[in-house]
Image (cartoon, rainbow, N blue to C red):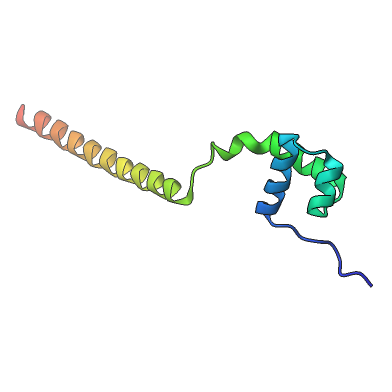
Length: 97
């Protein structure tokens, strides 16, 4: 009985797909070298070409957290400024009476 499907890491898939994109070797040569079926190499290459542009558009977890913190700070500041504005309006209309 077989051991099931082979699982490959994302780094390994990227390495194989990048080698396929370079076109230094044929897909058959890459399949022998990396011990992966040629169809799989074509699939990983297609996926890299389709989704590769998203790699540079993604934020890291740290950048995402920093942006969220900054957003929260700005909302707090907006709230304080609205309260101050209402207080000033109330004082301005109250002193005219």
